[in-house]
Amino acid sequence: MSYGGPAVGSTAASGPATIRQVKLEKECEFRVEVSPDAPLRLRLLIGSAEIYGTEIPPEIWLTFPPRLKFAVFTWYGATIEVDGTTETDYTADETPMISYVNVHAVLDARRNRAKASPGDSDASQGPRVIVVGPTDSGKSTLARMLLSWAAKQGWKPTFVDLDIGQGSITIPGCIAATPIELPIDPVEGIPLDMPLVYFHGHTTPSVNVDLYKVLVKELAQILERQFAGNAESRAAGMVINTMGWIESTGYELLLHAIDTFNATVVLVLGQEKLCSMLKDVLKNKPNVDVVKLQKSGGVVSRNAKFRQKARSHRIREYFYGLSNDLSPHSNVANFSDLCIYRIGGGPQAPRSALPIGAEPAADPTRLIPVNINRDLLHSVLAVSFAKEPDEIISSNVAGFIWITDIDFESKKITYLAPSAGSLPGKYLIQGSLIWYEP
Image (cartoon, rainbow, N blue to C red):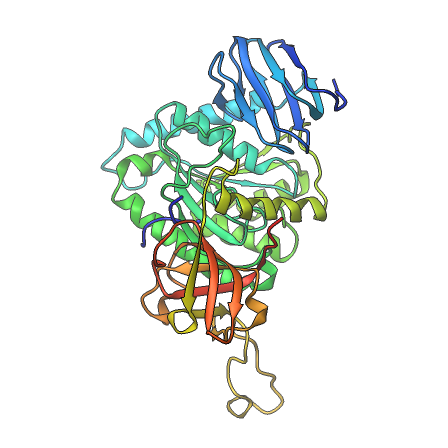
């Protein structure tokens, strides 16, 4: 597995495994939660069907890992075959898919208009769609559908993921962007060939809100430069996934993202109040459309424990692959070979330099050198492309390593990396990501 990218992240009870057929009427959906104990196989026998916008090839078995939740939708009717056990599965005949595909049709028309106006800087910009809504409203699923439908039409839209809590492109704690050239694989997910990744280091922006804003701005500026030199990407536009924090500071960060990425379409999932607030605050921007969409009945609420487990799975998947099909390498480095920093903290100025009675504030973007100590054990660190320390915040990251052992006598550190050989940079960033290999 390569590093992150170039320099610029009806209910059925579980039981014995059986093969059964499920017949779906048109515009119906088969919703599945795979058993935690074993994978599930599924294939399409008759008709046509898709998983989150990606068509299922006929007569080919797809294998879904334990605990995965997904839905098979058919526009015209289909028969599928299922081999294995599920935690739950049922068929739904009420879905918001028609409203979703109508949004896709409008976006497709805007892309075609942009493609037809290559000389006009404004008209040649395709739709910039941002998907917003509370936690567990189906934002990442809708983003995935819109991307896959666009790719099926021959477009190469850019996917931007600002949800550092879960991470659809790479591990949690990052904001990232990547071009989507093909419909997204229903099992493997987003391809990791060319992502542009910035490391926040925490699973909520609240730990360092200012750093989150700085990284969002950095990512947006890089994409602007790429769009300026690539008419195809510019016309295809982008789809931006956001986090579920929509109150107080979270709401401010949503507005910051809408403004920073110059979003032209805001899709609001599952909350009338948020839609009303956004329509009011954006009413003076005639080029921004705010559209409320119904969330799918297949969306389920996930508690904090489930989210933590999902984050752990994402980190494991980064090193070992979805089906344990990758072989990460254990490497050893001298303490002196690595320069580790964390971002934020420490007083902004000494008390002597402040007005009488004023308290020094923490500097959210200050680089703090990290001495190698026991606290680093089990930490996930980002490998920066920076050539100098003062480039760390503005640089994207090459990938991640996991600290497995620290030997203070020999002053050596053992870490797991996706590939063998020396690291692409000596500057490492520590956040609060800790992973214990199961």
